[in-house]
Length: 416
Image (cartoon, rainbow, N blue to C red; front, side):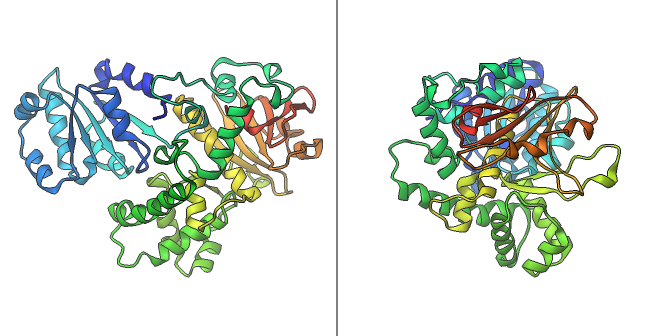
């Protein structure tokens, strides 16, 4: 098993008044059940997927819940939404019971939880493993923050980056883990080092089937999944691209409202990141179409039925997703955007905090030059807050500085 960065946050929250009910959500197979059992090994584990058992649980009164299950994990609670009302009733009537509610869809968050448990719960999202977690070998290993996380949380200085990634004392392990992530993604079930390659690819293919059969059917009653499958593949082929709903509708043979609804389903089920455009005061200068990124590069490869090889767009999505997940794991107060001006200047990722921006360009090249940083120069003139620093992330093992505020660094060094 791999250790998880979010464990200490979950345990700390569970000791507080607002941690009496913890809602843990995320894509299927991100390890919610395993993590909950690890953090709360003294809690009863109740699977709401069992149709017989869930009917029995739904009939319990608040007093019975308090007596029979004062501490419990309720897995796949979206299968029986009425249980959220039961847990609310227990919370309101008794001081001691504590619960962990697990669900693999934001549908749970959008409806019952936000309506019934507002102010009573802490909502935590669990994502596929990030590179610092993939570097661990067991629950007992400490998850070391990446350079990116240290930079954001502790203002770690850019000058602390090694001039050559190969000089890092843990270079071999970090490079191997980075390569693994780019090939297979971060789902825990396939992270074991001794798992044969074919089994990893088979698991990912099975994940796509399960996602279609269960998650999507939880979100929508499709008579025919084929249009959704077609759109999913289209988006996988166009990951890291600007999205025009009309163009997508034309290419996939469905209506614009249907395309928008399908995008919403992919977003709700944690399969994609929809990156909005950033624009400031002068709206005319900037293109306003969103960008799409697959959340997990292994899933993207499975959708396309690929084994090996990576395009520049796929590399970009893999890096954007990793930055997104690492920021979320640390609960950083960051907004994520892309930036593209009408005259063609494009910045792959723009991170906005309360006080500043960080700009990131992503290149798959193993030899970064100053030309690769051209979109980052003069960027401060467009932005409405100070630009703290800009980075070019690539496969170049050499750390390079293009002026005082632009640094090119190996993506694996930046993210591990």
